[in-house]
Length: 269
Image 1 (tube, rainbow, N blue to C red):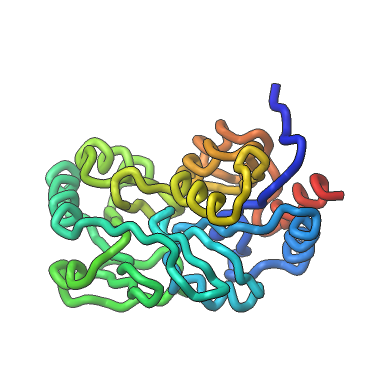
Image 2: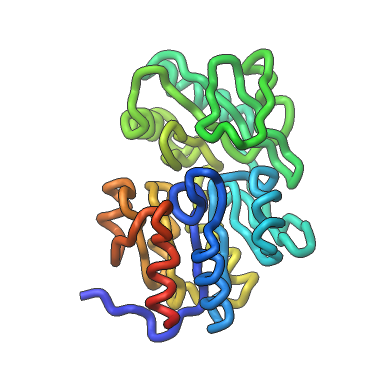
């Protein structure tokens, strides 16, 4: 039987499919619920696959000035001081080799990269379509251009395989060259080996002086599993991937129906 934490110390939320609605906004109800939790001693921690440049506008809109985990855990960023606390890069030669190994198994892939740093660019090779059209990205002329600067992760797509099929094939092909995760529809990613949302949230909690045993985390995709394993209370969104639903302590409503707020209103009533 699940026993909830005696006291909640932190509210960790994924963004896409979790806190954000489909129009990339956070509802007034969710904002109020997060503020109530923070006033009760459980501040909000964003834990997202997006790189820092991809959420800077959102952070400003939310008035978020704390620590944020970005890039599937590769980046831990202090929004208040605009300072990167930690950044893990994916070796570019290994990334190129990893893509070659996956393509040897499944055929041609289309790839993109998120560059390192608070101002790193997202570059896409010809044929790659961004899963979130609102995110800033620049088209490169060739795959070779993807390796021009240090990077935190590689995003891959296949013209025929499902996300689950591609993720499984990639894991089998790359071994310990990189960590493979599925972050959302059309979003299979390669990150530095051993780096994930679990390692990212652990570093952020240490910086904040918070005990993850008292944290409640919200997510919707397999990339949230490492975060779920670290926290005391795990909440999956309605429509979440089956792997995440199986690991959750409870299922809430969808992101469109303020599923995060519904749980927080109950926990911090």
